[in-house]
Amino acid sequence: MDNAIVNKTIMKNMTPKLLTVMLLSVMSSTVLLGCSQQSDDEVTVSSVQDQDSLTTNDYQASRNTGAWGGVYMSREELAAPAINIVDDSSLPTMDSDPSITEWEAKFEGTNAFVTTDGKKLYHDSCAACHMHKGEGAYGAGYYPPLANNSKMQSKYYIIDILINGFRGMPSFHKMMNDEQMAAVTQYVVSDLNGYTDTVTAEDVAQLRHAVPPASDPSDE
Image (cartoon, rainbow, N blue to C red; front, side):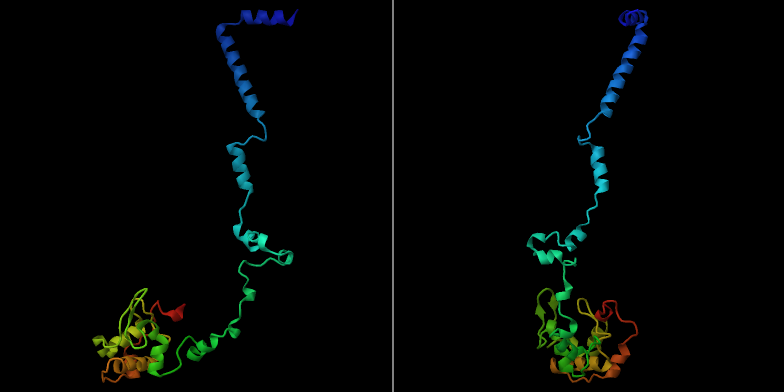
């Protein structure tokens, strides 16, 4: 029997409800088949996420290998072993640094002052902020005058600030011993203010404590 006749006979004998179900089934299959036949070249959310998961952006590595500045490099530089973007091999060592000699003269590599000359200690450690004549200054901050300052009449006030620091001023707890703190305090008391009180190492020892403040530059 002809297939067309058979199909027509089957369709004729189907109930409307069954026919509707079959049509919906065919349409659903067509939609799903179309999705599965999607072109591999078409960009979808899933394909973008998959690509991102395979890509690792190591910006530091590309910078260290010269990728950022490759257009400025010679063939010899490009062929040289990879180095960090900051080539510290060209920097002078501390031994050949011309300023280290002056630094060593003050600190002898111990991050502490050597002299007990109060005037020299003042000019080496205090004058940069409070000025060489103790007149103080305004700049990035306020540096109070130490000359002609009635607070400087109290030697213990000065010693306490030297030991503990004060606001933006660092502590000299580890950078100066008792004799040095007494010497620089005496210079501020007598030379900058004309007071006659005598400052001794014993005065400093009374206020010195074992634990330096956290802001002590010697701890860094």
